[in-house]
Length: 326
Ligand code: NAD
Ligand code: IPM
Ligand code: MN
Image 1 (cartoon, protein in one colour):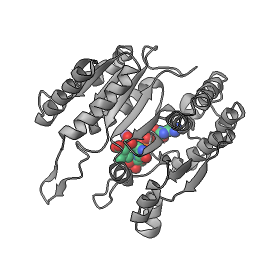
Image 2 (image 1 turned 180 degrees about the vertical axis):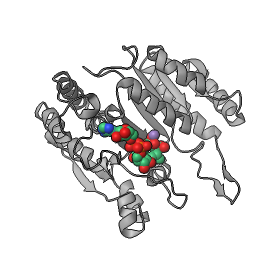
Image 3 (image 1 turned 180 degrees about the horizontal axis):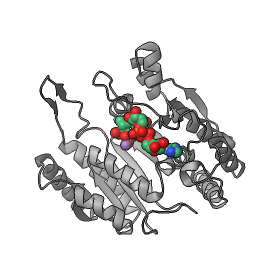
Image 4 (image 1 turned 90 degrees about the horizontal axis):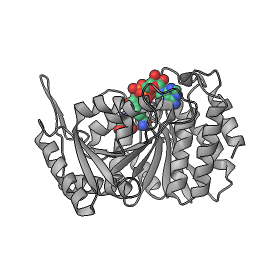
């Protein structure tokens, strides 16, 4: 298996070292292809990602990604969004369930997955910036909505056979379109559905996370709800994700490059390590994936944790402790 390795910027570099230490511990037949992509490359070369990078990424079986900096500069085009679009990875899958020994801000015993549309919506890239106004076109297509709803139904069938469709159809025509398409797909698949307006969802998710199982939503709503879900689970440093299309797959923590802690060696590597777990599951290494999960939970139980979880261990300490249990 050929895996593209993209550490990225800030803590991306630090958590990638930890993720690779765990992946390497299995001794699998893996060719790792390193890539320099991101803001650092842009500062160094004037280009954050090249056409050649995209071509070479497509030659790999999948991508393991750290995190990148995306500055709020209208002249800077997010490389993450470009990769998601060009590799047509339309589903961003973000699982959330409690981990051992992590203090939760609200009631425990939940287990839900956010299935976020990953290529359109507010991230269409169709934008205009004028002197006195700026426009972003929110594009929701039938194809985009159908395939994300199909993905949510596929996941639901392996779980409780129900989905929650999250939208703002009371205000946005594009969302009433998204809702109708999702309902059609759920009915066709024999999957039970329930719908929530996104504002009410933000409120209820934090109060009653155990009510939810598979949550499907548009790109920006899914982005926002998944950071909220990260808080429910105990922190961004714990949450992995998979970007999946029909051909390519890409695994990354939900968190960003965390400039506030970058370079200090204290980033929590668990989100990146659990992204390796998702990669292993996708690649058919179910036993290895379970071993990662077990090792992470044992290290959490032992209280070997970084400062975001109240501990005083370094990224390296946590990663070594997890690697030793593999
Ligand atoms: P962030 O996710 O980088 O950080 C938010 C907060 O969570 C910070 O306080 C940070 O210290 C903390 N945090 C995040 N990951 C952590 C970890 N592993 N361990 C301990 N604490 C952790 O979000 P931000 O600060 O809004 O964004 C910083 C940069 O990252 C921005 O340029 C943004 O565009 C980019 N970003 C990239 C990705 C990605 O690469 N997938 C995701 C989100 C944000
Ligand atoms: C994420 C991030 C990205 C997004 C940014 C960095 C482009 O927040 O992966 O959740 O908005 O999708
Ligand atoms: Mn996000």
